[in-house]
Length: 470
Ligand SMILES: *Cc1c(COP(=O)(O)O)cnc(C)c1O
Image (tube, rainbow, N blue to C red; front, side, top):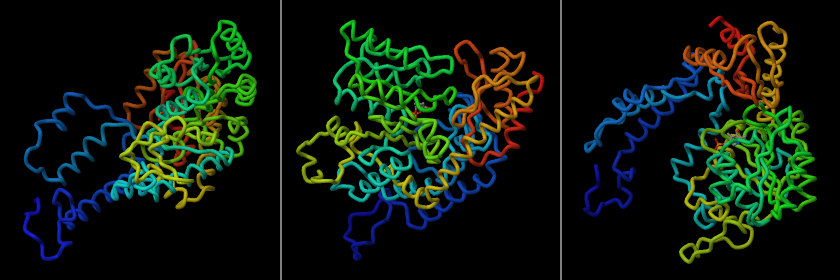
């Protein structure tokens, strides 16, 4: 397939593909991929929500010897569709209620495909000024939708884990080393981040959450006072806006007051819940988030984007660059001067795909109001679920109310093992999937309802099947 070395008569008559595929092959296979994706979208409702394969079986079908000779790409696409994609969770299925769904929208997928197809890079200004302006634009649009200050700057990353890590690095670079305050409800990737940043055990303070599973401002104040008395320096409070477990939000305004008082950095992990702030109802719950120094959200969760996409927003201008800038001699001719952003200077990533394209494409295609409506629907579906659970008090007990699209509940007479068995039975049936969790000492079932395609009927049928005798 490789071209020979003879000089072509037409200087442009080279195979269009680096590795020698013809334009006809590229078109045919490319169109086939689009058809496979759209066909699946059309019948998504009828597919199994989650399937976990057997490692030996999957390795036998997908592994094998290194292919020295070419393999038919149609056969590989079929294998991908029939085996790889069937053995995973379908987080965009309307009855996927487990952990956090991933209800990606098609316009966003198109943006991602374009970026991949053109191999768009967003590292230096000179090498990617178009993608850089798109990234700056979507960061500003999202900051505006969330109600964050105009001065907010951002960087797109692979997800919440790397987004929070980036925010933490900026906090330490601005404030200096010291103690970080979290709760027992903080996502477990956050203490991991702090440990890997080199914070000592004394510098990672995990506070007990209150009865509503939120950070208590009093507990926080006391912990800070204890640390100061012991000669330690408070650095940052890590507040959660929408916890993964229950959707609960820490008292952001009170935390902002405490951070101001002590010259601490306020970081908000809104990986799950921050997008709720684009709705009126969510904005009220998340009041105080606009006072944060850094906010993280996961557009691959509640902003209808395909994996992977996290966003770290920082409200102190220049702080991202003060933390991550490098000016090596081999980037001299592409570095920005005056106003243009070198995204390679805003996180640990240098060569990076243009993750902004999918957000830009989808915000333009659907418009901001469609996003507000879709997020509001997720909030409303959890409230509908709570009301239905309360209407059947002999069967269900609500453990935590509907909060930003999450509701936790118990089946009367079921213990943790029964809850796990009910959840497993449902997942194995392929009809729907949800999580079982522990809230302090209570075992619970948990529904996360952020897919706008979910219907009330989907929820009612899921609860009926859950309640069926074991
Ligand atoms: C999902 C989540 C994370 C981790 O984000 P990833 O995108 O999975 O890396 C962190 N915090 C919260 C609250 C989350 O829900």
